[in-house]
Length: 94
Ligand code: SF4
Ligand code: SF4
Image 1: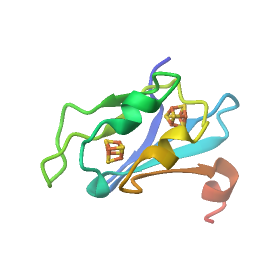
Image 2 (image 1 turned 90 degrees about the horizontal axis):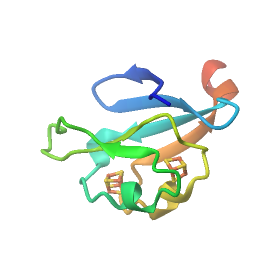
Image 3 (image 1 turned 120 degrees about the vertical axis):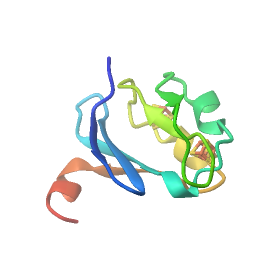
Image 4 (image 1 turned 90 degrees about the vertical axis):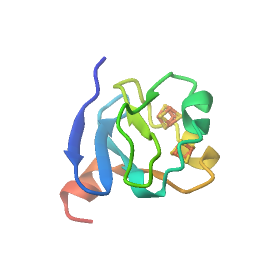
């Protein structure tokens, strides 16, 4: 599968994820220190590091279309970079 990136702005990347494609995976790039723990821990090989750096000089994770929204990387990231939300909450403006 290929990534479904729905938004990219100065701070966040937002991807539609989950087996039902009803979750959003958010990368708060400015918080990322490029440690790659999230890439290593993902059991679905759903994350790859960017080829561009943040303005702080770090590579950051990009979801590649395989994310099941299992949340393991959220708990593993030491810098609280990653979050998952219900798509309905986001589209409703929540
Ligand atoms: S939520 Fe789970 S499947 Fe998705 S990127 Fe994180 S560890 Fe991988
Ligand atoms: S674990 Fe967190 S800080 Fe480390 S690369 Fe992943 S998102 Fe960035």
